[in-house]
Image 1 (tube, rainbow, N blue to C red):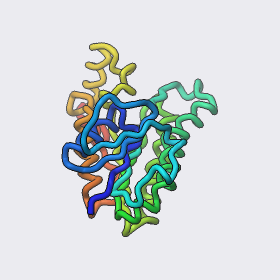
Image 2: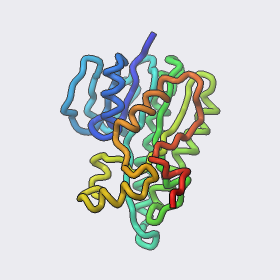
Image 3: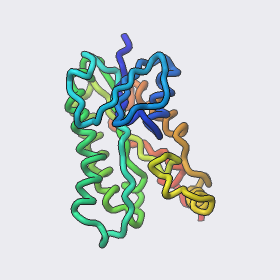
Image 4: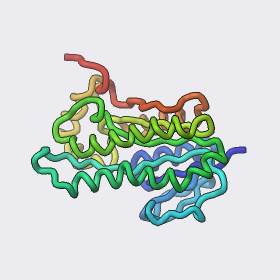
Length: 228
């Protein structure tokens, strides 16, 4: 039996692309976002709520998967970062994911489900001004591997580590043609990612029954390649 897949942050960006692709493939999706979404699908049930306010009563008895899509892009020189910056990034990216997974653990095990979290290429590929977000996402990678071991064989847990992707969250970094062109040029494949690029791999990982504990780079070659 197929159970719902919980997608946290399905209003826009990568979370929306994953929710839409899952629905189009016939999966039942329970989407949770702080604000109402502007799209509908017969396989989609949308819940307007913050992840912090979600309770076990909101969840079905069994889940086929959980996607935690919220994130942040807080790029500053290290000397400019305040403790509040580090805490805010850690709260959104790491603690937020942990909170949802504790809430969903029973339903995931009942449904033999799959978990998908998100890191960044900046964890494995050191980048200037990424100290706070790389620290937070590094914690997400640790959470991925720890839970994959603890919850095996009943639940698979994987993570995608993208490079810069064209989403509302990245709008300031891609705000004009010059910035977008410079960002594309930094990638060996000479373009930034799209939400479709990420959603395609995300859905594969959610459906796979023999992949767990992996942090998969989807980054236009930036994570492994040098072309100059």
